[in-house]
Each structure stands twice: as C-alpha cells, then as structure tokens.
Amino acid sequence: MPPEVPPRRTNTFTYPPNYSFPHHRLRTVLRDSTKQPIVLVACGSFSPVTYLHLRMFEMAKDYIRHHTDFEIVGAYLSPVSDQYKKPGLLNAHHRVNMCTLAAEQTSSWLMVDPWEAFQNYQRTAVVLDHFDFEINTVLGGVHTQDGERRDVRVMLLAGSDLICTMSEPGVWSHTDLEHILGRYGTFIIERAGSTMDQAVDSLARWRHNIYLVPQLIQNDVSSTKVRLFLRRGLSVRYLLPSAVVDYIEENRLYLEDGSSSEKEKGKEKEIGTGG
Image (cartoon, rainbow, N blue to C red; front, side):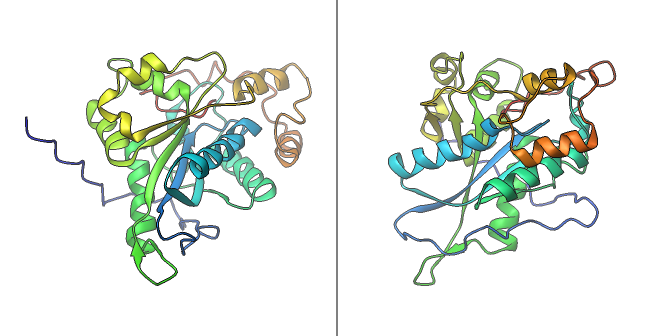
C-alpha cells in the first residue's frame, strides 16, 4: 500500500474579539542547534487548574531533557470552550483567569492561550493547527544561534486517560487521530490507577510519536475531587496554587453542584488533562 499523505494543517481560523497570541515567554533562539524545537500544549477543562496540571509540564520537561533530542521553547495551557458543556465546567472567564494566575505566579515558562476558551468548541486537531500557524507562520518559528530558521514542532501534552479514550472505537475519528498523533505527536503522563500498555498497542501505527512519561511520585489530585471538597466546605489549599485558591474564595466559586445545569452533551472525549 502507498504511504498515507500527511494531514494538511488548517490555515483558516476564527478568532475571539480582541485576541492576540501570547508569546512573551516563547524562546526564539535555540540553545542547542542539534535539537528539534518543540512547544508543549495541554488542552483541558482546568476547572480549576491544579498542581498536577502544572506538574505534568515539569515531568515532561525532565523526560524530554533526559530521553529525547527535543528542546522545549514554549509551553501552553489551552482551556476548553464553554461549548464543551462538561459537568462542573466553570465559565471560560474564570478558568482562563485561574490558569493565568497559576502560570504567571508559579512558573517562569508556562503560558495560557485563551483562543480556544473564548469561542465555539474547537477540535483538538484544530487547536494544534492554531498553535502551529501562530508560531511558525505568524511568528516565523525560531532560529539557531547562527541565525538559521527552524520550524517548531507542536506536541500535545496529556494524561493517560486521553490515550485510553483514543484507543476506544468510535470516540475519536481516524482523521483526527492521524492529525494529532501522526502530524504532531504527544507526551502522555502516567496517571495513578491507569494502565497504558493496551491502549498504546491499539495505536501502534503512531507509536513512534507517542512518548510515555512515568509519574515517579504518584499524584491523583483531580479537578473533580477539588470541586467536591469545595462544595463540602473543605480546604483545598496546597492542592492548588495559592493565588488560585484565593481567586476561588474571593469569587465564591464551586460552592454549588453545577451538574444539573451543565449536563454532558455527548461531545467527543477530547479532554486529556483532567477535569
């Protein structure tokens, strides 16, 4: 059989009002010209963002430094649109604010892109195309220290629950899997209580683009558990960044169960970072 033609990137996008792509922490010059520049993108509900969401980036960074020929030049959280209609999904305004507080006050390299959050629901494949377009077409990629231009490879960062849904028949379209795993690739963080071997076996055609990152210190904090704690009047301090806890308290968020008004609509299960 002839090889499949690589998926083409979408080049036409819709934009929220007054949107500008954040790149204040995007490095434009490679430290090591022998390495391939990459940007990590985590798509998720982040309702609310937790320390585990942030730790995923650090675990991926360690793995990449020790086991690959990649060099990270940027990393983004991309909160999902309100149109995803997931139970417990707070409105995008609050979720973007909490992610921004977490990124700006706990990290020197993470950024938050509100493009996905403030418009209609966008498939993960299209979100990755958006990052590819903004970084490589609009900004012109990155350069080596000798001035040679290089394209940046965009890669999805997710928890192992995502790879499990990708292996379930009918949940993801083959076209989107080919686009995400074939064109871009992914780093999958092991999660407590989940096994990835069987899921990865069913995605064998893209195995070369799937990087499995072990979680050496198990952490099963989830946004769902945090919301439950808050509804019960329990403390969530030290499960989330302090600035996020303060924001939740100041705005009296998650005090009521929103599941009755935010029922799942049966959209594709694309949220891979917990939620």
